[in-house]
Amino acid sequence: MDLDVIEALVEPADTKIVLLVMDGLGGLAGAESGKTALEAARTPHLDKLAAQGICGLHESVRAGITPGSGPAHLALFGYDPLRYQVGRGVLAALGIGFDLQQGDVAARGNFCTVDEEGRIADRRAGRIPTSENEELCGLLRQIELPDVEVFVETVKEYRLLLVLRGEGLSGAIEDTDPQEVGEKPLDPEPRTTEAQHTADLVREFVRQAGEILSGREPANMVLLRGFSKRPSWPRFPDVFGLRAGAVAAYPMYRGVAKLVGMDVLESGSELEEEFATVERHWEGYDFYFLHAKHMDSAGEDGNMDEKVARIEEVDALVPRLLDLEPDVLVVTGDHSTPVRMRYHSWHPVPTLLWSEYCRRDDVSTFGETACLHGGLGPRFPATDLMPLALAHARRLRKFGA
Picture: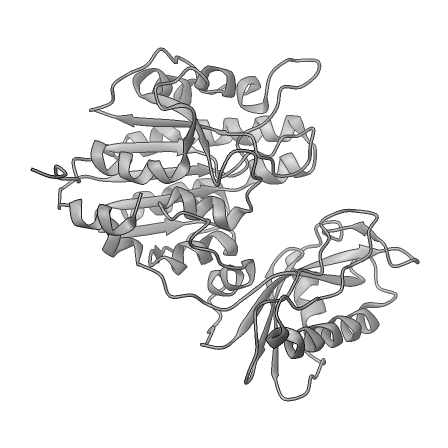
C-alpha cells in the first residue's frame, strides 16, 4: 500500500503495538522429525497467542525471492523493499552510530578465511570475537587511498564497516562477497561508468587488506557487500503516527530502524535485557520493534537443536510482554533460515497477530504447517502487517465517504 494513503488515514489513539521479530524464524521440516524448528520447539505462550489471534505466512519481497535482512525488515515496517532499496553498508553505519555524511559510500564487510589458492574456506572467519575484530580493524586503518578518507570500523564479531569519503564517489559497486564457500572473492565491478573510480579505490583497498591480513588465522581476508549512500525516505513516525522505539542487539537492525526514523533504545546484548528495555521504556512509545537474533545464526550454522532452544528462549519471555498489556502484538520473522539450507530462503514466514479485535481462525499452534491454514492467508505481503496492526490498534479512520 502507498505510504501516503496510510498517512492520510492515521488518527491518534491511546494504544500500543509491539512487533516481535524472531530473526530467521521460518524453516523446513527435518527428514527424521518431519517438523521445522518452530514446530519442534515447546512454545506454549506463542501457541496460546496463535489460538487467540489470527495467523498466516508472509512474504517479504515477492514469491520465490530470497530476501536479505535489510529488505525483509523494511517490509515489516511497511516499506515496499522493491521501491525502498538501500545497501547493507548504510545500515551497518547507522547501526553503530557512525556519522555517515552526504556523499559517503559505505559497505558492510566480513572478515573471512581464504585458503592457499585464495578460495573462501569460511565466510565468517570462525565467527571471531569482537575483540579480535577491533585489533584487525586497527591494522586496516593503515590503508591509504588517493583523494579519499578511509574509515574502517568494528561492527560486531566478524562484521566490519568500510566508509569512503571524498568527491565524486558512487555506491553502484558490485559486492566482492560471492556468498559461497569454495569461490574466490569477486572483483568490485562498477555498475555504471560513473562508478569506475570508486570501484578502483575499493579494489585497491581489498588488495592492501589482503597483504596486511596475509598469514593471519582465521581472518586473513575481507569480503565487502552492500555499497550504498544514505537515502532520504518518509519517516516511520510521520507515516504511521507512532512514537517508535527499536530494541535490537545487533547493529544492522538498529541501523534499519534508525534509517526510517525510529528511536534506538540502548539495551544489553542478551535477549532478557532486550525485553527489560521495552519494560523500562513502556510509557515513552506507542510502537516497539523488538528484535531477537539467534534463530537466524543457528539456522546458518545448521544447528537444529540450537534453533529450537533459541525459539523456546523467546517463548519463555513472551509473558513479560503480555504483562505490559499491549493492544496489538505481532510475532513473526523477517525471513526463513532453514537449518538444512544454512542460509536465508524464499519460504513464507509464520506470522501471528494478537488483539482484542482479531477475527479468529482455526489455528491453535504457532508453526509453518498450522499457519498455512490461518486467516491471514498462506502467502500475504509483509507490507500488510503495519496497516493491519494500526487497524487492530484502532488507529486508522474510514477510507472514503
